[in-house]
Length: 299
Image (cartoon, rainbow, N blue to C red; front, side, top):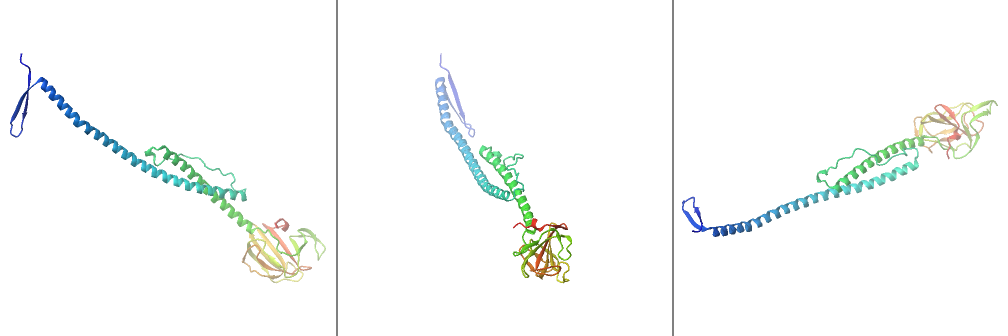
C-alpha cells in the first residue's frame, strides 16, 4: 500500500502562479515542529522584552511616586519642626505670663481635640505621610489654641498694667512724717471732733509733691483765703473711680486738663488755706467716697 502524502500549495496573489509540493506525513510533522520551534524561538525573546518593558515602566512609576512622596514628606517634616519650635516658644511665654499673673487663664488645656482632617496626600496611601499629617494637624490646632491664649493673656495683662499704672500707690512726698491720720480727729481751730478725709504729712515749705499714679488734672486752685479751706490744691482723676487731692500747696506746677504720670512733680508743699503749719494734705477718693490713703501706699 503506498504511503500517504500531503500536497502543499503556495499561490502568488499578483501573478497567480502556484507552487506545489508533495510531502509525506513524517516530513509534515518534521516541518510542523521546525516551524513551532522557530515560532517559539522568535516569540520568547519578544515576550521577555515585553515583560521587561512593563517591569521597567512600573519601576519608573514607582520611583517617580517615591520621589514625590519623599518631597511631600520632607516638606511636612520641615513644617512640623518649625511648628514645634513655635509651640515650645508659645508654651514658655504662656508659663511666664501665668507665673506673673496667676489669675489669668491658668487652666489652659493644650492639644484640644476635634474632627480628624483627611490627609491631602491620601491618594498615595503612604502610612508615614498619613501619620505625619495627622500629627501636624494636631500640632497646628495646639499652636492656634496657644496663640489665642497668649493674645487673651496679653490683653488681660495690658488692661491690668494700665489699671496698676493709674492706681494711687506711692507716698505723695519723699520727705516728712504723718502728723494727722485718716478718720475722726479734733479740729485744731475749733477743738471739735470732725472727720478728716485724708492724711497730713508734715514737711517744710517747698518739698516736691508727686503724682501717686497716672491720671488727668481735673481741678486746681491758685487763689485761696487765709485760714480757710484747702488753700492751693490739685485734684487728679486716675480713672477706675479713683481721685487724689493734694492741698495746702505753695506752688502748682501743672495745668487743668494736663495728663500726668506717677512720680511726676506736680507742685510744692506749703501752708496755704486752713493750716496751722507747713504740711501736705493728701486725700484718696473712690467713687466719690473718702478712703484711708494708708491702704493705698504700697511702698
